[in-house]
Length: 144
Image (cartoon, rainbow, N blue to C red):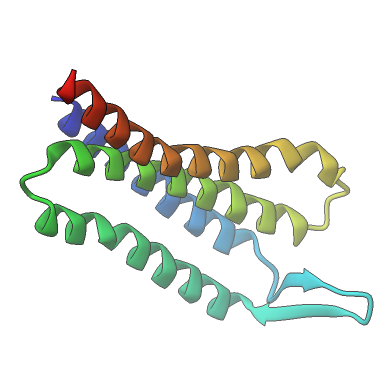
C-alpha cells in the first residue's frame, strides 16, 4: 500500500517539476546567468538551459523505472527510492525557481531563500541516509 502511495506522490512531483520548468523557461531572459564570478558572469542560452534541464530531469526520474525493473522483488527498497526521487524533484523545483528569480529583473534579498535551498539538500541527504539506517535496523530486529 505504501508503495502505491509513494508512486502517486512521485508522479505528482514529476508533474510539478514539469510545470515549474515550463514556467521558468517562459520567464527567462535570452541569456541565463548560471554563475557569477569576480571577472564576470557565465551565461548560457535560454533554449540550451531549458533542454539541458529537461534532459537531466528525465534521466534522473527514469531511474525509477530502472530500479523498479531491477528490484522488483524488494518493494521496501522501491518505496524508499520513490521517496528519494520525490526529494530530488523538490530540489529541482527549488533550484529552477531560484534560477528564474535570480535572472529576473526584480530586487530580491537572496538570503531569504537560503533555508529552502539548503533544506532541500538536507532532505535529500536525510532520505539517502534513511535507507542504510532502515536496513541495519531491520537486520538487527529480525535476529531478536
